Length: 404
Image (cartoon, rainbow, N blue to C red; front, side, top):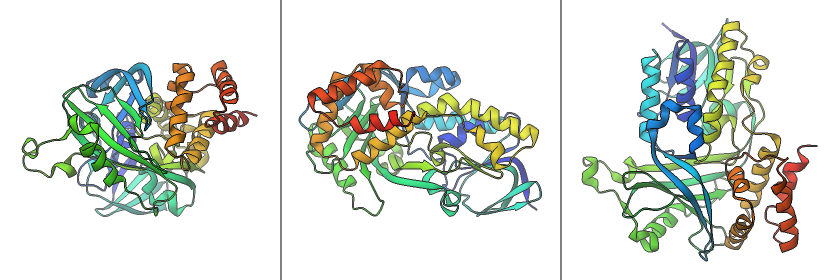
């Protein structure tokens, strides 16, 4: 016998759990996850102000910081001042999954989606464990979504490959947003996001135009954490503290972040959300910022459509709130296309530019909150022309042209 739900959410990542925590208040909700455990391989840093959109998640913050560092290969650096929160992934996942279950929702693990079909007033979701009937399915599977690729509705420009782990930290560090540790033609970048209990999420990031490209990201991670100045600060968590589990696998963080554009936000009875909806086309750890600002509003619009029983693609399209305006989306995509061709000297020029800009503009650039009306953006163009530093000129102009 087929089980029936109001909403079936595909993917128990942060996007799926946030929507499930809201929609399960008034609907029967099933969350399907192909892994045997809810994934904890992601990590997030947001402005502390993001907590005003989800105050009940304050307990999930494991570190507040007043600076974030950006460092080039020659140690030139930029320090971004602000108030930033590092999220404890395991706490966040635990709190949200408990909310879903306490609301009566169901989370089905080790359950892989593989197909679907439409029935009268329902959509049938086929998985390795069962067939589920739903009034609405929400795809939060990200770049790996079979639906997104089978329907040909995504244009991918490239990827950020991330490889790292949760490590012990022997002394206090400020968050490191990006550090190009090694002089390279095609640079990789280190991120370090410290937690309160002397631990940190440590990851190497590599931009690639294709997943078929050869990447030495694991080799870079081992070299940086074992053979550079970071070896005196960062240590692998001892195996004994994890009750004999494989430390590297139990504390792995990373994955693949696609950079692209989704051509459609919805199909009949299918709504795309999270990475699959590309709320930020070129973000990894900072992507949670925009999702926190919008997930309650998105859930409210979905609830309205459920209440009205209007679940066709044109009905669902307005449910995706404008996470990014045209300027920010165009700026981020243009910047990523340029980053694919950067060398270490180009990143050093970025540090030079950042030191000339107003700190708030740099903050808004990182978290995709730039506003065209901000005069400092135009001043930055003047600086670029004066210093012949054209690194961000094309992304800024591309974003501005999008407004006309």
